[in-house]
Length: 407
Image (cartoon, rainbow, N blue to C red; front, side):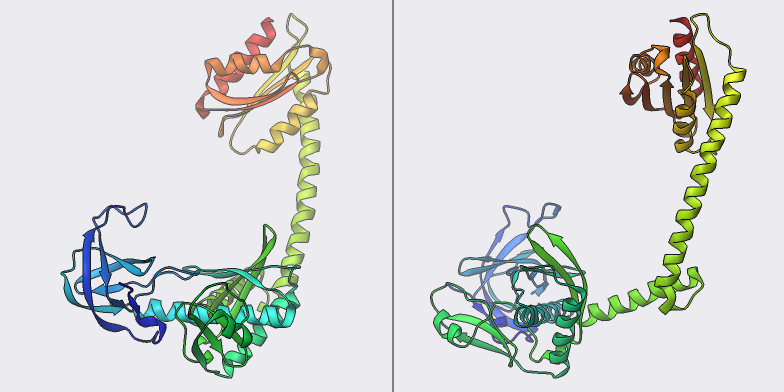
């Protein structure tokens, strides 16, 4: 028996009475994380919207049971509940805040999609109503900031005009003659949502009665997704929350940058310029320090019996890992010199040599890691590794130095 969908004609109905025609234990969990038992209930009519067309399902109560999932199954609608429901008459109650939020988002999507298509020739190819953000995917060239703002402003103008939102029924042919935005190839009578003088679109979802109930529409950002452009947006209470959150973030940034909110961009640009200049200065200073420390290390390191000068150093946590690389590079510029460096705080090691030293540092690293486990690799002249246990850095470097000096 085909279930009557009460939300088709009255999305504002939050309570209803229906006849329970079946209630069976769910054979498959309604979600991958569900652990508690569940039951699947079929009604002769329902106000619960099933997940469909990018819009999530309703939740609420059916008798004493909690409705936790609703899905389409051909002519029936399956209600997943957390306890059995007796056959016969039962009362249903929709979670209204969730339902109204979905109505605001979905009607706002129809309006925004219509503005993108009508004014800028960008059709919507998909829609997703998320728990935080909603998205539409547009096909065509990348929408500029002016286009995004233009579509948002046009949609909000229609929202402020509080136009009627009507439900229409007709065949695909009839709807086509009325100027439907996106034609569908289906037989029989179709349901469509009409925003007066703005949009007509086949849809089985729940919608507000007038555009003013959308409240406001806020376009967030646009990103490339495969061949399309994904536009994030929010409506109604979500727009209010996001606007407040954005302002709080802007206010916090202005306080950190010690400027007025409207000066945040300019202040951020100055801060980034200063940061880049400081980074270059620090890099140059580290380079000079590495050159000086390499020269001092060479003077204090004796040449081993095999003619190799092995400079072994283990640094504390106040030394940056980047500096190890710079120092190793400087030491490797000197004939028959091998640098064996580590940072005790992280267990990070670097072995580097002048090609004239003639050692295979990859082989040296493998031998070292056999004794002191870790991961790493590189070339015969330069290798990096990280020990599993930081406390073994001193022993690992000493071990590697003995191998180099004895070979």
